[in-house]
Length: 250
Image (cartoon, rainbow, N blue to C red; front, side, top):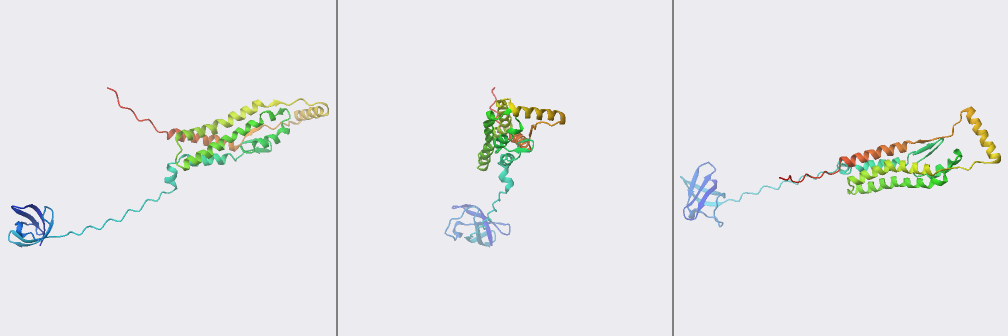
């Protein structure tokens, strides 16, 4: 019969519980295995009334190890969950290629604004645009910040302040640079001779026919850059770590 030792003492012997639920006493001399008996040891024995004889330790087979749990595969959602600024930074970079300003039939993005503005000079003969045209090169700071944010987000090192800073650059830099360049434009010298006569004729014709000089308008690129920049600022503020409250003073 099989059983389990409940208690054992080298002088008094021990007590075990058999598989039938009864308790059996055994003497130390009835232990037949090489290893000493101990409480909790599974045994095989021969019942003899209320005594147990010929006890042997039984090796309980170990339970097979549980198969390892399959590793969770991180999907795109888990990747982007820790990089909330990555899709916004990518959209900001794409928006830099969209029409930023339109002037009559012409439209320009952040990368060709200087060339398009130079071509638009004849459409605005009253302005000398060369004096402030170079300032438009500063608009490259917007795609530069967007590219830096993409790299840092991909590496998992972008913090909330980088997102907020990129949003502020995309929101304020186009306004400041455009207004600064416009303020540096000077009035073109008044034409003389035949050119003056032609200009006066065109001005008179425009007054009668209703022709207007083309005015610059915001393009969809500028609007998209502003909206995406606001979203980056919102994400940076919402995910900014909060300082833990310090211990209260008595």
